Length: 130
Image (cartoon, rainbow, N blue to C red; front, side):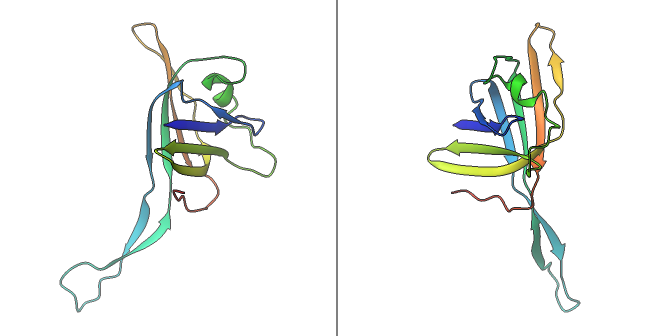
């Protein structure tokens, strides 16, 4: 698996080596449209969403370290609200514009420094695998 996230300048940086765990979801809202004539639920899908959480080890390497990517996570790129985030696994690619909402660092009892970086869909474009 590879993971690429834009830095604050808009350049995609591979941070696969720093990320130890990634979780993502692509849920859709749902609406109950059950009529009085039904004895079971009828539902329709509403808007699509995307969320991601990256768990990473601290690395402040000049251009490729996760610290360099997320230290300015609030920086908005010209004409772009989110950061392009690309996951590639087994020849399948998922690319989204992600709004990263926090960059919490944790110094653990063993001395390690880690981060768990959450993000959400930024631009209203439905996430799809290609």
